[in-house]
Length: 100
Length: 325
Image (cartoon, rainbow over all chains, first blue to last red; front, side, top):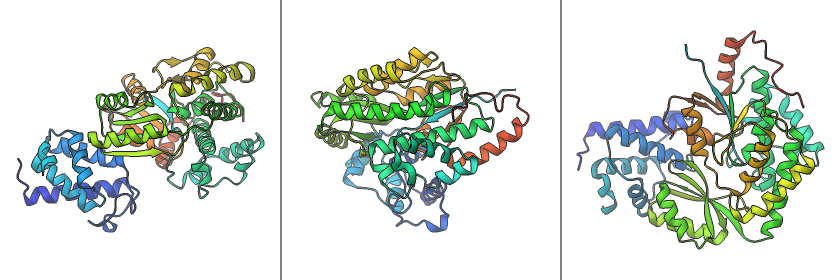
């Protein structure tokens, strides 16, 4: 189990915000934790997948996509804030995220 | 010095437009309006007032394919007229028709005829049965195969769009069941695709074979000027007969867009231009490993400027393709 430091928390936020700003061609200032990825900025499932792959590579995570999928069914992610929290849980718990 | 190898890739029907596609193509050339006029004159007067603001062109299954064809053909022609010449072409699913036009294998009008006939034959074959397609993102092939096994031959994998991205096709209730099974399995996302036809399955094999007869009687297929990569088996299509077979197989065989992209990358393609509306193929390509770039329609102006200036003085600028317009 990894420890989530303030630096990691900040880094994850930056990566997520920068990602959506670039992909959705929106100014960073227009994004917030409450931004609905699907309805506010036309995000889609492939963006989710891409972010997961980015973090898997960045933090050397060995986590199955299905595990994340099962977690998402119980804890739907719609907003940027929810996505950040999920990513932090993935980093912290890895494949055990489904048992939280 | 390594030279760039370019492929034009053509999407199937577009589920989500960026919104400014028509403006971008009109800025490139006047071809879009010329193609619209031909479309209207070819028995599709509904396209006289074509507009992305009108959802009919997205929600109507036939109109959606025609729209995608229009964007694909006009964008490809505009690029070629600016001396951006592809070494390879590939069409994802019904994107095949625009790829065939671009290669010179069929005329624009014959492409329209093929799309309409295929659609008509498919609707006749399914005879009002409730069919459809679904998208599943986040599972591997073995998970998908496990799901399909449970569907009593009611739905099948239609297309592998990416390593973790699949389309399934078949009876509506089996599609719904598959999406539910996928959620239990741990997929990230599922959605129904906005079509009523079970593309790329044996449900429409007879329609495909009848299309073959129609092609023999009514369509003139030329030798392609540019190789086309089959989405069915990733072979290079270089003869009229191969193209005829691909037109039939593309209807009722499962396809593998992911394998087509990997094939092109492994054979040296390092620049892909998504010729069409939206940017679905560009997004799918992000999950494929390799040293290449993909340009969707909204990034095309920059590319055109770079390449145009590099290629100024290219003697083949106007002589490459049949001018059927």
